Image 1 (cartoon, rainbow, N blue to C red):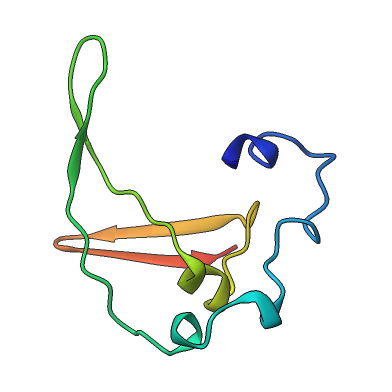
Image 2 (image 1 turned 120 degrees about the horizontal axis):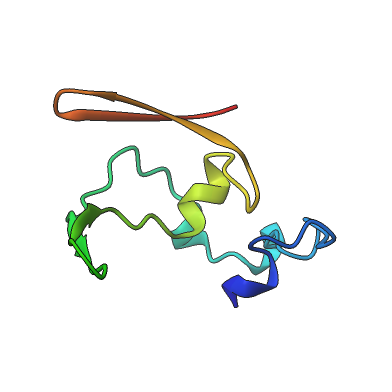
Length: 83
């Protein structure tokens, strides 16, 4: 459940990281590209575009829960890096 680690500084990262032996081999394959759809996030006054990223591939790429990231925005491109 996501609320176990979001905004909870006391939470141990060890408990949120999947053990390598519990991750299926199919999930450990390298997938350099992901295809997602930009959705609309409903808000009271205006709907705003949003992108939801989730999956074991984030952990495999080094983005574990509570990892701080930087998003560089250019025309037609988002680049996500660890801070």
